[in-house]
Length: 321
Image (cartoon, rainbow, N blue to C red; front, side, top):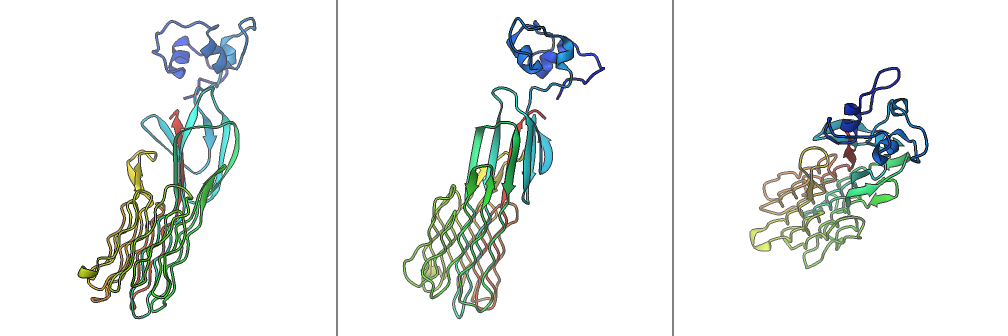
């Protein structure tokens, strides 16, 4: 909270509170912390209470949807925008989470599609920043392959904040297309022999799983590789799990892979917003990756399309709510 603005009076108790001290702590106007807060340097330079009007010991910034939790101010971007910083106290840092869009699930033409890979994920719990304007880009999810189409799912779009970027999730493979697509996490493979999806290192990410004759691989997640198809169960591979952070104020998993389709059992969704794989034998459709979490889409069947990957998100937080 900023100190009162002119012409309102300021007490030393309020200055203590702004500095994170107990209200009744002993304090001097010549203390380095007070001079830094007031923006008046040098012990020989005159300082007065008027120099402290409107001053804050926390970062001042705008952009995105702003909420507060546990003493943190949180800026959430679900679409592209600008994070504008007007002031940064000495030593203050931010946390950030940058999640790209997930890949779409693969399609099928008489067979099944593999799960889409999760969007790449980058996180920092302590990142130095200075005053200025920072571009934020939030990537969309890749489209799932159409019903009856033997094509792979589409790659998602990348997300970024300042110079930090996360690569999009790779699309899930389809019969006749060996591996899943490259991405922040790779899409699952769909061939009827051992073949993997690929991750390209654009943030935390993992490879997709292997396909089999009666099931397709799950897409990779930020926390784990995509599951392999289980041919004995005619089952698609599960999506790889995502990673959990409390940067939004609540512990939430992001960037889970999509499940691959299977004849009897569809692959489970990766925790972190992944979609479930379709079931070919009973004509059950796949589900999409969750928006705002970068999950991969589930793999489709001959009667049901591969599903879209979920859009990404950028979250920035810092002490000072």
